[in-house]
Every structure is written in structure tokens, then in C-alpha cells.
Image (cartoon, rainbow, N blue to C red; front, side, top):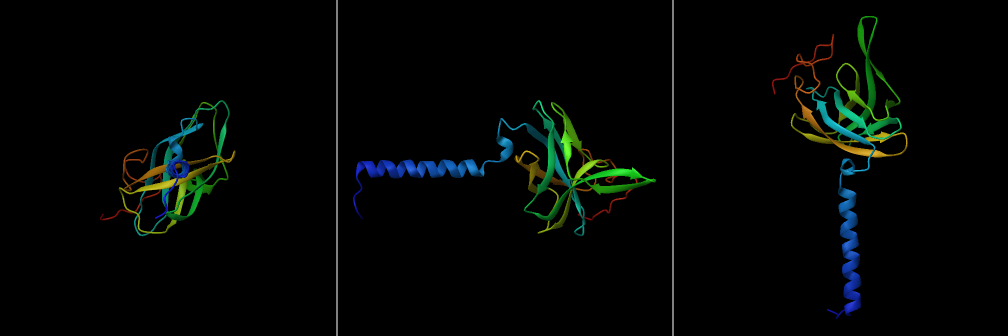
Length: 176
């Protein structure tokens, strides 16, 4: 093994330190940033049996002095991820895709059953209540925010109604 000079040993250690620091920075979740204008809490997914589409819910808080537009989301666990809004039309609850959702300046927006939600379709693997799944939220200004969502049963607490479904839409029950 060749002997290294003190200068090359120091340079090698500095490079390794920089690489380790970069790796830690890349692996840190985006929601850990203190300067992010949008914060998320109570992020959860309503699990449904038999591979049925799931809904993602959360509270979005905009701490900035300007409105922020959420324009999309993605997940390594689902092939299709879309922003949706449930509306009552002619006595029937309909889920409509939306291209963006505005979070008011110094305000908040709730994604909840019967309102805005993230539609998650075509799970890439089995998903179960209790799982923690990452979703990346994309904003109009190019910012992205990675958030962990807790998978809950159809009748779970949070913003889910006690009967486990959206108004006028019965939800399938599972033996799990």
C-alpha cells in the first residue's frame, strides 16, 4: 500500500466529508426545511381493499406573504397520482380532476373527504393500514415538498367521517 503524504491524506478526508455531507443533505426530507413556505400536517391516505383507488388527505399551511399553487403530486408507490375535488352535482357526488389548487397567503387549505384530495391509483405493491408512504407535492414555482403519509383504514379518524365514506358514497369494508 503506497504511503500518502499528510497533504493528500487531508485532501482525501475533506473530499469524503463533503461527499458524506452531500449524501445526508440529499436524503433529508424536504419537509425538514425551515424556510419552506408551505408546511403540511395530518397527512394520511384512506386505504381501500381489492386495489381500489385511495385518497390522500392533509392540511396545507402557507406561511408566505403570497398565494402558493399546488400543481401536482407523485409517489413511488402509485402509478397515477392526481389532484381531485369532490363536488355535489345534480344530487350526485362527483370527483373532478383539477390542474392546481391555491393555498392563500398566510392561510391554509384542507384536503379532506368530500373536498380536495389526492387520488392515488394503481398501487405498485400491496399497501396496508399502518404503512408510511412518501408523496412529493409539486408547486407552480418549481418547489417540491416530500411528505410522509400514514395509511389508515377506511373508517379511520382524522378528517374521515365516522361512517368511513364521502357523503352519499358507501365505502367497501374489509375483513382486515
